[in-house]
Structure formats: C-alpha cells, structure tokens
Image 1 (cartoon, rainbow, N blue to C red):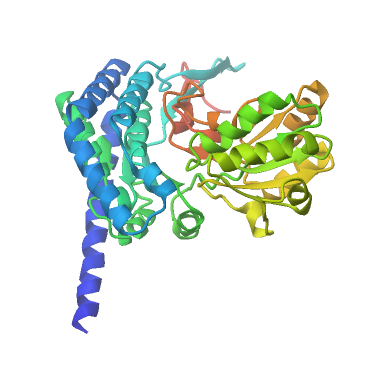
Image 2: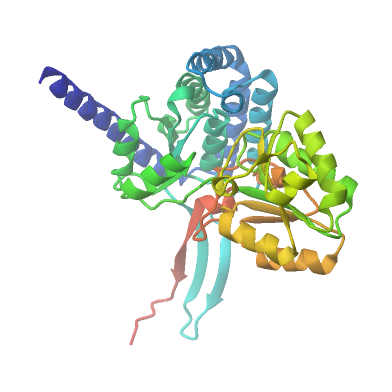
Length: 429
C-alpha cells in the first residue's frame, strides 16, 4: 500500500512540475511574440557562442549518456544518434547561426486586399504560441528546435529521451544562459525537468498552455502521443525511404546514390531502407551493388529474384518491406516496371522521402507525379531531406502529415496567421 501511495505522489509531483514549466512557457511566449528581429537574432548568436563556450560540460554530460546506453546494450546505430563530438557541436553552432541569418517570418504579410466598402484586409504571419516537442535520443534536436522556435516567436517545451537526459540538460542550460544575457525570457526554452515517462502524459493534457505537440521518434512514441494528446499533433513518423533504380538509370550514379542513401548515416530517418531495381537493370547492377553494400557491413535482405542474382542475400519477409531499420540493414526487391515500384512505395512506404535514378525524363516525371511523399527525388540521395540541407537553417523535424506542415519544418511552418482589418468606421448593414 505504501508503494502505491508513493507512486501516486510521484506522479502528482511530475504533473505539477510539468504544469509549472508549461505555464511559464505560456507567459514567455507572450513576451517573445513582441520581440524584434534584432532581439531574437542577438539571442540566437549568443546561444551559438554559449554552446561552444560550454563545450566541455556538454560533451562530459553526453559521454555519461553514451556510457549508460552502452551498458544497457543499445545498438551501434542508437549510440550514433546519441553521441556528440566536437564536430557535431560545431554543426549545432553553425545551424543556430544559420537560423539567425534567415528572414524573420513573424509579421510578414501573406496577402492584402481592399473590399468595395473600403475595408483593407491583411493576412499576417504570427507565432503558433507554445510548441511542445517530444523526441528521442538525438541531443542536437534540443538546440535545433530551440533556435527555430525562438526565431519564429514561439516558446518551446522540450521533452527529450531518457537516454539523452544529461546531454539535453547541459545544452538547455547553455541556451538559457544566452537568453538571460540578452534579456529574453528564460522560459522561452524550457526542458521538462524529469526523465519520468509520466512527464509525457502530463504534457499531453496541458492544452491550456501548449498550442501544438510535435513528436519525433519511433512508432510506439508516435502512437502514444497521437492517442493520448488533448493538443493538436503534427506527426513526425518513421522514414521507410526508397531508392528506385530505373531501367534507364546511369549505373555509376546509381551506385553512388544507393551507397550514400544507405551507408552515409544509416541511423537517420532519411536513410534508404528499401532498394527497388527494374528487372532489366538488375542483372547488370544488383550483384555488384550487393557486394559493395556487404563490404560496407550492410545486411542485405531480398526477394526471390534478388537472391537468384545474389545468393549471399538473406530472404526478406513481408514485415521487412515496411520496417524502418535505422541500421545497416537493407531490403532489396526487383520490380517489373516503374508502376510496380510506385505501387510498392505506396503500399509499404511512410510518405517520407523516395528517389528515382533514371536518365528518362518521362519516367522521372511520372515518378514525381505518382509518388505521394513529403520529398521526392530525381537522381539524388534521400539523405538530403533535412532542414539545414534545404536551406531552412535547421528543422523541427520532418512531418509526414498533410495538414499544416509537410516535410522538413522550418520557420514558416512554425507560424500560423491572423487577419488584420483596417477600416474608417464601416458598419455592417
């Protein structure tokens, strides 16, 4: 009985902590919405400086997280998502500087018109308010999301994964130090102060303080948030990304794209998980690419025709076609036509990022038209689906939804709009 009472008390304490953080973020959002571009840019540049100034503490906290994850038996791919380095910290700093250099979306006039009665109507960008972000493992998400939310005039409430809790605390402390130094509200960047799973449940009920929830992570997390949230959700679901090598593909280009899409950083959501190859191309391309993939330590699983051409390949199951591995594992299927490739992507893909490699312009146009994904590529790696690579400075995540935002979410996707109407005393008759 005592343990039940203690557990209930613990849940109530977590709920109170989360509610306090969200309420303070709501107040900060009202102040931040009035901040000038110069104020926000000054804070962002100071944030970038603080990240590097506090490099030693951040890397120490991250090393502790990595060590704990290794002790717990986490996979190499998971550790790669979690680990920070001098280079990754510098990339985080560069990303914040890039956001500071982008145009401020707040106050932009999307359209204006005058009615016959003389009313002048303007459609103006405004911040969303308080953005709640629930994410797993990757600590660079903390600085990316904080910088984009700040520039777009939003307060952000961050709930990172338990495995990166120390790293996120250290990064958030650096960002908050920058806010204090530039006289913007510290609560504009808030981190849920507990790794307890109850913190997520508490966030999802606070629709009086949080305006939108953005989950980034695996299917269980996305499902939990979608089912439990009382707040509108913009999903950033899994990335089952495809590369289709067409009958008219330039094979040396196809090899480079396939190896990059799978091997450059396999633990990311924009890495290729399934390779589709036209049956006319397969005899010339498949044995060689399988050999190169296996040399890069990729476990290849394939359909029956794939295994005929490359006997070392393991058999693929039905489940493999819809699996996001986030690891050095790849499914390969030989298809009879472009149409079969598109049908496969439609059935098993996650509407994230898909690519065709071809020199046939008509085939490329059909693929672009028929593949309904957030990002569709012609003769390029899916690894480019990224806010920084798209010129957005950073990204909140990659939305696989269709409403409000789709693909890499940058500054504009963190705003909504309001109508501002100017009159001279008009009355409706």
